[in-house]
Image (tube, rainbow, N blue to C red; front, side):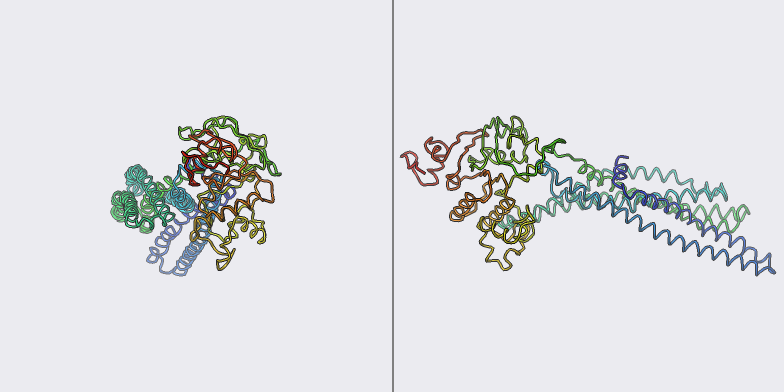
Length: 591
């Protein structure tokens, strides 16, 4: 099977240890026959010989002591081997869990933005936790259990056939019926566990969204609505879980009935054979003792198939994630370089199509190193898509986008993105200190350097915090205002001293005085930097070297502040609106 082959590939490095565990399981099942066989010898060679050899008690006692000693010795040996075997299984399972989780996480880091927009966070979390745990369970329990069932049953049958063929056949005659029941069970329960896995994913996604959106929920007082929605998902998961569980209970009576039929067969057929003299009392005792070694595999097989179906439903999701390839990735001969970019950016007839819609259409734009460029336009005109093309968060559909004369698709992704600093309007801060968030992209920064970039970004509110830069920020910046989060995000972007700095409406939540201070800091950066700003405020764009106006994915206007005012187009309209100028009467256009 594909799933087992994949798991075997992931076990490279500890396969020999796992093979040892499997072999120890085989040995253990054979050793389970020793005590019943010895019990048979004690009954036939000692107990039943007492009336026949009253003068040979010393010999019989010696034989009894030897047989009991062997029984005790094998019990201790079997216990030791089982302990080592169990530890080895669990060790291999944990190694698999650690190795594959690490690789899955690495693969998630390499995925592009499109991947995460198509996948639910709850589904990914379920894959990394519950689904992976089923992989460990398969290695340390399911495989061991199936092996135990098979070899315990086979070894018992071999021994029983060596003692009495007819009696053995009377016991194993029930086996074909059991396998038919198991096959029907496996076919029925498989789809139900896949359905259960999907319902668990939906439940986790709903919980994750509610936790992340707790502010919005409280703001709109929709707690009751969200609780009802979660309760509905929870009930659906409960229903799917019950359906999967009840499938096993529907088949359980047939499995248990066939298993118990073996004990009845031993008592009836075995008792008749013993009274007829066809088998000895010791043989009857051995068959009666070994009856559980035939019953137990039958009982366990149903439970193991139950777990195996859950494992298959889970591991298919893991394999899907493991082999998922990002749409955007580096070429094999991608350009890598240690020195920073100069910062020249050139869009040459660039178009972008997303989900069948043309978002950017024939963009031609040259940005010189060190320039400050502002991007403006109505909502949905393609501003964010334009800047996302620079870091290859979005792949261009046609045309060419060059940085320092090299197509961005020819750069190694790490090289490209290490040279681009980004601060977006939708700020994500980590559950870390203020210091840790600012130094996230350059963790070699000293405390003085962190404070320097904080000052440049107007993170002055840090002085009012009890622990200063060591203050722990809640998940996603909980406890900070929108403007405070934006300032920390800007400091984080500046801290890597990027040759290209992209600010996606980063100052939208700031007051005008703070924005003015930050704009001054950006103009006086101590390192060479090409700055591209998405903005809607004239106060942000007026000092830019070039202002680009987008409309429906095309460049509508471009020029300096004064040039665009004189054109009296979109930019002039925004200027008039924000400055209280009546467009019809004409207004001051001197900026």
